[in-house]
Amino acid sequence: MATKDADLAALRIDRSSQGARPRRSRFSRKVIVWLVLLLSVAAGGIIFKQFFIRVVEVQLATASLTSPSQATAVLTASGYVVARRKAAVASKGTGTLVYLGVDEGDRVKKGQIIARLDDSDVAATLQRARENLRLAEADLNDAKKNLERTQVLLKQDMIAQADFDVAEARYKRVVATINAAQFGVREAEVAVQNTRIVAPFDGTVLKKNADVGEIVAPLAGAASSKAAVVTIADMASLEVEADVSEANITRVSPEQSCEITLDAYPQQGYPGYVSKIVPTADRAKATVLVKIKFREYDRRVLPEMSAKITFLAAGTKTGAGKIQPLLTVPATAVSMRNGRQVVYQVHQDRAVEVAVTTGQKLAGQIEITSGLKEGDKVIGKVDQRIQAGAKISQKAN
Image (tube, rainbow, N blue to C red; front, side, top):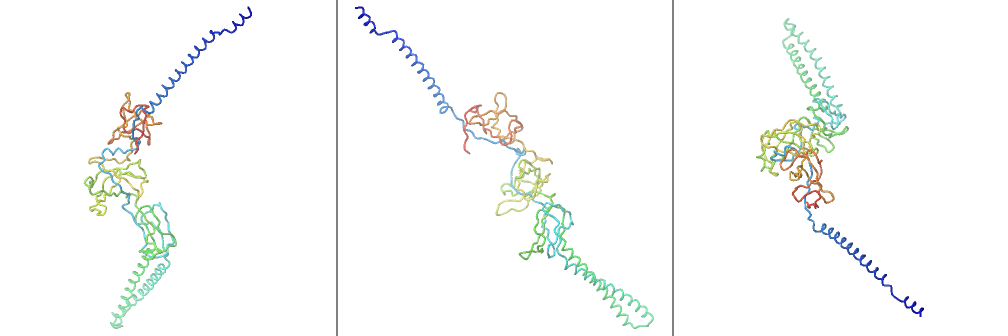
């Protein structure tokens, strides 16, 4: 009997171990539920930021150099730098170019020999004319002595009047021959001088039109001949010629102050003034030619450079010095935040606040004295939606 009771006791179910296992399972499920909730909240936040946070659409502006004269500008026009004194120097004679003593960029003085043609033929003509003159001078000496002798003999009644008349006629003929010989010498000398090509004024050589060995002729009649040998210009006489529309010509007046900006050096302005308004219009272009003189310029200014002319309001004075441009951005790009002036740049589609120092205002632009450099991009118009860190998208131009 005892053995049976022991076997039955072994068959009983242990309820204590089964009660602990469900409690641990419920705890694990709670942890998993909380983790799922936290992940859901995080994912929802990310989705909210991506799809429900407002994106500000902006247009960027560039910090650029602007002339201070823009504040008083009334009109702009385009033109070209020209030299008032410019010449294509040619020869008055025809011949082969045997000497060329200048190159592009060389400075020349008035009367300086630039080039020389072959003068062997005209030099021979000059020598012959001089010999003819010497021969005529020898005849004149003989004719003069003969005339003096006949005068004495005529007074002594030793010769007839006819003999004296013959001697006098010979003397006058020889004098005329000498005059003709002198003109012949002068003509030959001019022919020789015509083979020398000289500078008509002080200037700078802009272009070589012929080389040694080429035929040079005054009118360049042959296909293989050249007329001008070099082109020179007086670099002290540079000015700008601009075409102004007929509709705007009333805004231009003589002596009006201007600012000249060369396309080659856009960061540098040159003071100028209207020197002449040509009193005729171009029918085809409906424009009037206006000439603008520089008040001051440097050696970088060259003929045929393209230029932009800004005509300034009446009463505006420009000094003799060069006009230095200012770094500017649109005035709407600068805002006051926390007591300081700032602009906003865009980095990785987010607004980044940059503190700046400003100067004078110029017709919708404002000078930036510190905080930016030329070429920097900033948000062109700032409002209360734009804060540091705001999500930004750029408008298509």
